[in-house]
Image 1 (cartoon, rainbow, N blue to C red):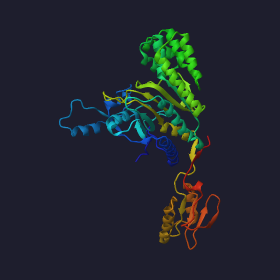
Image 2: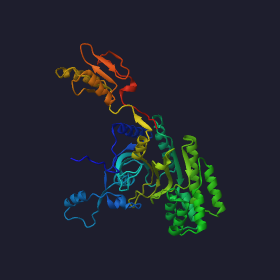
Image 3: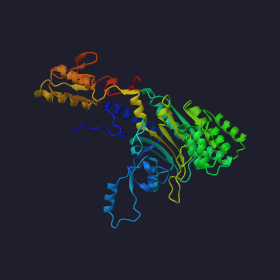
Image 4: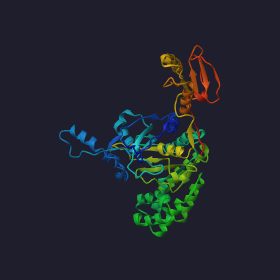
Length: 455
C-alpha cells in the first residue's frame, strides 16, 4: 500500500497538539459557563436553502448527495420542493433554526455556547481550513434584546483569552464598530444603497483604499467626494469615547445628519467606554470593521492576535435582528465565534504553546517477567484508583529498555514492583521506596500541562 498523503485543509494534530487544543477548548468552556452560557450541539446537516438564506456563500457548502438520496427513498412520493442537504459551514445559521424549532421550550433571553466542527469549501491556506472547530456564544431574546448585551459579549471573549495568557497565548485586540454608524453616515451622504457600502468597506484591508473607492462607485453609486468621505470614516479608530467625537466632527464637516448615525455613535461610545474600564487596551473602536454578511444590524466585532495580525480574525461576530424569525415573532441576538482551529494552528506552528508531555501517563509500571505481569497490573490498578494516570510496560524487557521506553513517551516515573516497591524519577535519577496506596506524584507531574513554548 502506498504511503497515504494528508488531505489539504483537514488538520490532524499530533498528541501534543491535541493537548493544546483541549486546553484551549476547556478554557473557553469554563469562561462561557462562568458567564451563564448553556452548552448545546446542533446537527451537522442542514437543508441547503436554510444555509444559503443569508449571505453569498453557495460555493462554501459541502453537499451530501448520497445522504439526500437515502432520505428521498424514505419519502413516497418525493416532495417536488425537496431541498438538497449540506454540511453546515458555520454555527450561526443552524443556531437560528434551533431557536425557531425550540422557542416554546427555551427561556429568553437564551444564553448558549456551542463548540463543534464545521466544514467550508474554500482554498486552504495559513489559518484557513476546510474542516475546523468553532466555539460560539450567543444571547438571543424574544422580540427585543437590550443593547447592553452588545457590550457584554466582547468582554466575555476578552475574559476567555485572558484565561489563556498564562500558557503563552499572545494578547488579543478586539476591534469593534457599529453598523448603524456606517449606515447612518452613508445615508446622510445621500447613498441610498447601504449594503454595497458595508461590503466595500469590509474589504478595505484586503484590497486597499483605491480599490474600495472604485467599488463604492460601481456598486454603491458613490461619487468621488462621497467615496472619499466613506474612506475617511473608515480610517478612524480609538480606544475610548473620543473616537465617536471624531466621527461626529467628520459628519459635521460633510454636512451629514442622520438619526441612525446618532444612535450608532451613542451605542459605540457605551461599548468602548465600558471596555476601557473593564479590559483596558483590549477593545478598540475601528470604523472600517463592517462584517460583510447581510444579517448583522448593530455592533460588529473582529479579534486578532497581537503580533500575528496577518493571520486575520480569530474571533468575529455581531448583532443580528432578523436572522431568526418565524413570521410572527423575531428573535434578535448577539453572537461571537472563536475560530479554534485557526488559533491552535498558529499556536503550534509558531511554537507559542506546547505540552509538558504527549501522553497522560505519569507512571510506567515495569514488568519484571511475563510470569509476574499480574503484580504490575495490581500496582497500576491501585494507582489508577486514586486518579493517577498510569500504564504498564508493553514487554518484560531489561529495565534499561523499559526506562528508555518511558523516556521516549515522556513518562516521568517508572515503578519497579517487588518485595519492596520503588519508584524512579527518570529525569533526576532519584529512586526511593513507594507504596501504591499512598504515593502520589508532584502536582506538576500528575497530568500533562500546557505551557509557553519557545518561539
